Structures are given as C-alpha cells and as structure tokens.
Image: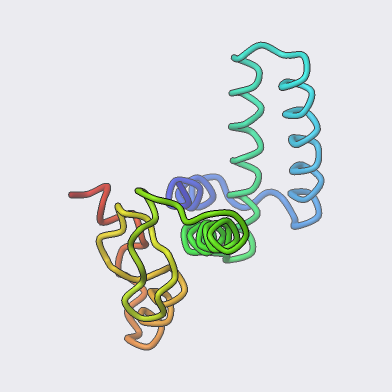
Length: 138
C-alpha cells in the first residue's frame, strides 16, 4: 500500500503539509465513526478507505515505513495478548530468529520488522522488498 501512495505523491506532488494531513486524519476518523454509528456498509468502507489513505499519506510525507511500523504494532499487540490473556495459536506461533518476538505465519523472512529493518540498514541495501512484498510476489 505504501508503494501505491509513494507513486501517487510522485505523480501529483505532495500538496498537503503535515498539519493539513493531521487535520484530514481527524476529519476522516470522525466520518468513519459516524458511518459505523449510522451509515451503510458502503459508507463505512468509503470512510475506512479515506482514513487509511490519510494515514498512509502522513507516513509518506514524514518518511515513515508503514509496513515496518504496522508489523511492530502487530507484534506489540500479540505480545500484550500473550502476556495478559492467553497464548495465541495459529497465526502468530512463529518467532523472529533474531529476537524471538512473535511473527505472522506468512512471514517468509523469519525476522520481525525491527530486526529486518536493522539488517537492511546495516547491509546498506534499502532496495530489498519490505516484509510482505516477497509474499505478494511469490
């Protein structure tokens, strides 16, 4: 998804400032809440897409790798659930080979986002696919 946003911004230019995007995120979140309270399924999906676009636009504007940080957030959530409630079975039963954090079963790299980013930075090869890209290609 981030690559699509990157291409849009390359083609159209970055027309929004950080503050404009943050206001847009707030607006879209409010519209999403209203759509879920009173709207149709179509309006819910529309507003969800608008909010997601705005979040990814902020990531693009600020140079944030959304794939890496989404993977980190998923790992934190899984760790929280495993620590506070119960071990998850199935999807997150694999562990990062470097730090042992939970990783999704579709992760073919064997590293969590943080360890993968560190490896990429140390190798100096930022052209490797992000986590999930190799799965989509193969």
